[in-house]
Image (cartoon, rainbow, N blue to C red; front, side, top):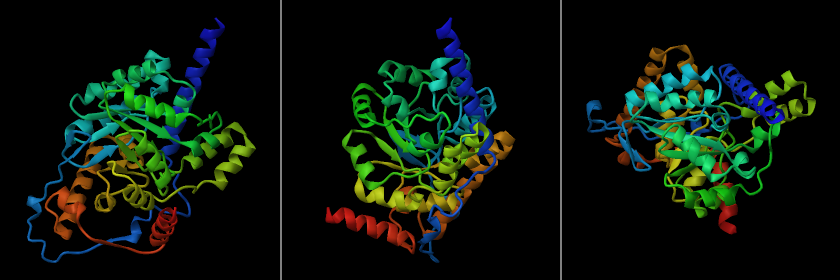
Length: 369
């Protein structure tokens, strides 16, 4: 009876946290004094593109799958009944536009068949889309077994597994588990045990060149840099710490609200450091951000906060947002004279301060080593 009661309480705690995560994300809790630094990336206008807009092809391939647009709906939610409608709409748009989608951390789905339905709904509504599972690195460090990983993959018939790294969030989160010893070893083991690709992602503080190199050496298949400049998970957990009246967590959330590597810097540094496919996320808001990301070296761009915002409103709002992203990307490609994604990747750009300092100072230190 004690075990049953503890399981019920654990499920309720996770469900409450997931619901609060949705509510707070919709409050647009963003970085305060830092940005993605995409504004420091300037594309070169081509007054003679020698193209018609109708010639532009945005299709691409990522991890062996074909996409109509190089877009992923980033991992966000699940594990609460409140996520059912949102995940349904997100999955439907992924299917309609042939883009990819990740689900939120699936630990709740492993603990409860009722909560598992909030994840299973994704594959039900997107039978052909690229869908990826998601589990936290902290759970791997705690000893989550490979059999459990396979169960969450089977839960949504996933095409890939995302492992999220969120040391800052775990630090500020009222019930956080900032225990990261042994994660890299488990990632390496999973790379041998699983038959699907592994994506390792941050949640909003960025991936440094040193971490990117370590991940590449441990046989993962892609990195989602998820830099600072968008939603602040330190900020979200700080709001939750206020509700829990935890003063040390409240103060820590305020102190580290803007902690991390800006998305554009993390992307450029990762591109210089590893040969893996890269996903650009963290403050991605429009098609210009996407075009810049691809030129800087990303294979895909991932969107979270705007997707959940529009998905919570209506399916029509969500489809309009994706249509706008697509049109914006095509328009930027037209203006730089790129008929397809391969040509877009080769286009020149100019970077200005403070992005130049991020790149050259960190790159210079690494080169000296």
